[in-house]
Image 1: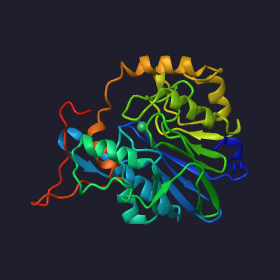
Image 2: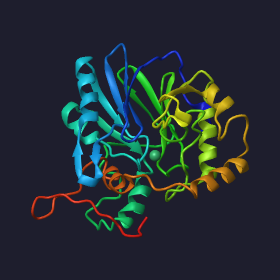
Image 3: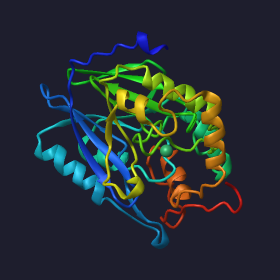
Length: 297
Ligand SMILES: [Fe+2]
């Protein structure tokens, strides 16, 4: 859908509160309707000490405490995509506060790919049924009186969606801050040219649209930041701003991606996140295990 057809309404101004996770450089958000006190959680994090095989919920508990203290009602838990660098805590938060869990409908492609990589067998459903809602391009939904809509933005992964809520867009890993550039496009199903096209869709939103990042790494030693605008990205993004062409972007992105190491938590993240953040089933002894496919990624 061309961005001009999207139901953009900059007069709708949600309250956005960011929660930075220093262990994975992820920013999670609570997006609230000031009138109805309904809210959504975007890209929450479950803490994992991978070396110890230990999961905890400190980051999620901070978000739960905030939502409770503010008297908000959680209506949605949104995943912008299947993250490869942190684990989702969505089922944990949903268990405490309710709400519906949503992701892009192409989650089925991710589940098919990584169901095979992790040899999950037939009991692992690859139809997205672990989620409550699968979004298609241009779908809209309500957070109280706020209207939200989705933009399908593949390239980093095949299931990426940007969520636009009034004057705020949550870009997932489609873009980083202007001095951070863009996310890698070399995971299975990723494509640098497709990512370029998706970024153009985001940049066709109004210049004043607030953009909220999923990650920031504080390049060149600057403080962590997570908010910019379409206008700022168009002018200054180091990978795509100033009118860089698709060919220039694809060449740069492909060369850069060939040098990047795998994210530290990719193996646990994919196994948890392709299940909507749910843990793998218990074995006969009541224990849960993750797998490490040797030379499988
Ligand atoms: Fe990602």
